[in-house]
Every structure is written in C-alpha cells, then in structure tokens.
Length: 125
Length: 209
Image (cartoon, rainbow over all chains, first blue to last red; front, side, top):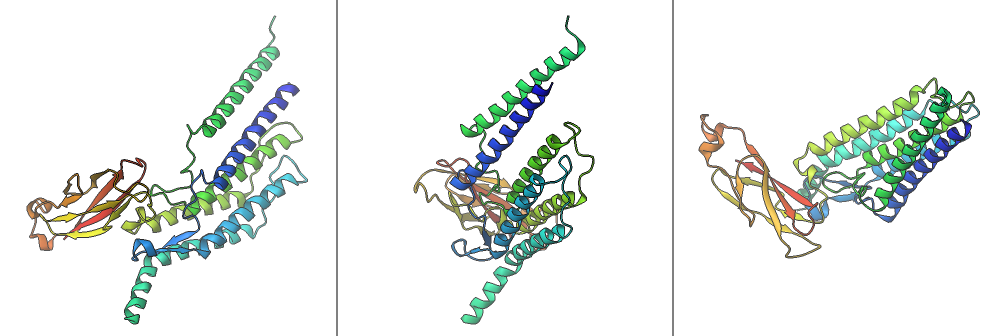
C-alpha cells in the first residue's frame, strides 16, 4: 500500500508541475496570448489612439503574483504540514484594494476617459 | 485466493495507472496543440484579461497548496479539516472582480471589439435611417486583400457579400406601433470574419434611427 501511495504522490506531483510549467512556458513564449494584458482601453477615441499602458493593471499583476508566490512559500515552510497555513489577516484588504483600484481605473477609462479626451480636444481648438 | 485487501490494492494500482494515463494525455495534447491554451486568458475579442490571469494564478496556487497539504498530513493522506476563511475570501474577491470587470467592459458596445488586430471593421458604429444603406469595409493587416465574410449576427437588417448593410424599412422596424420617430432606436450587430484567420472577427454596432 505504501508503494501505491508513493506512486500516486509522484504522478500527481509530476502532472501538476508539468501543467504549471507548460502554462508558464507558453505565457513567456507568447503561445498563450498576452496581448493587451497591461493595456487599458479608452472609449470614445479612434481605434489607433485608444490604448494606454495601465498602471492599475501593473499593480494588480504585481499584487497577484506576489500574493500567490508568498502563499506558496508559506505552504512549503508550514510548520504544521497537513493544514493550510493561516493567511495574514490584512491580505484580503490588500488584494481587495488592488482589485478596486484596477476596476476604478477600468471604469474611468470606459465611462469618463473618452469624455475627458473630447473636452480637452475642444478646449485646444 | 484473492483477498479483499489484495483486491483493494489491485484496484488502487488500476486507478493509479488510469490517472497517470489521463495526466499524460492531457499534457501531451497541450504540447501537440490539440488542447489549445493560446486563448486561456483572452477574451473573445482577443485581448488578454487581467482578471482571467488572476484566476489562473490563484487556481494554480490553491491546487498546488491543497495537494501539498493533503500529502503532508502526518495521519496519512487526507483532506485538511479546515480551510481558512481568508483563502475563500481571496477567491471571492477575484471572482467578484472578474464579474464587475466584464460588466464594465460590456457596458460599452465597443467593448466586445476593441482589441481585434487580425481584422478591423470600419466604421465601428453607424447610424442608419430605416430603409437606407451603409457601406462597411474590413481591413486584414496580416493578409491585405484576402477574403472576408459579412453577417448580421444580431438585430434587424441584411448585409451583402461586399459589406453593404441595409436597414429594414420603417414599417418593419415598428410594426403596428406609433410613428417611427416615437419608437426607441433599434440596434444591429454586423460581424466580419476573415477567410485567412477564421478565428478572428470584428464587429460594428448599427443604430437604426
């Protein structure tokens, strides 16, 4: 039975690592499309001038990767294996805040960004 | 004579082999392109989604963590007795953020077509009186001059093979109702698909005024 358990552990480990590795490699090589991941869209502008590098997306990317990797490190160094390590209590607020910033930026560019650019164009004319 | 324990172990090995085969086939199919992951974090319009990427990262983190917790139990392989509420909260935040994000994106009609680069329709929005026509054009930057297919995928009207949209006459727009001027505007969605890139398309929104 011990051999069977070891076999299952090994094959599931190989599968998860292979799957995560494949996805990571495809993300890095561009096989998984990442076009526009860090670009926002401003409504109401011509298609060739409606993209911008989005700080709100960049901060969400950083917090997402940071939170994910940090929690994995907590699991790997957990002094009580067999249980989930406790998540720092301020994490939901931090990740939630990051998502709110992202959504606010997206809403602004969708709903108000075009109006802003129109006004600035009118004032410059 | 096969004992119950022997049968259990034999069944376990069969299941282990099946799981290994399943995992191998999934990875193999990904590598040979049969399982296409190219759009795994993309929206239907081709643009990569930050919310989907966050889902992807959190899913892998939770899956790997759960596996490590299950096999790390000192009492043997078993599920953890408790899952911290903060983990569920983080997943809830991620899911809610995704839904709100899509709500914001699709609140604007152009939100479904703002990142297409393989094929570009022009104009993206048009006002057409009932019974009148509007000429649409499509550009395929990767293969100029290649063929395209025009369709009206939602709303009234027809479109010809060369992109000439025809709005329905006023009587058809507001059957049995007060004059057209009092009727709400109708919308139609025109889609153009590239023959060269069958998975790529662009859309335009027509308002019948």
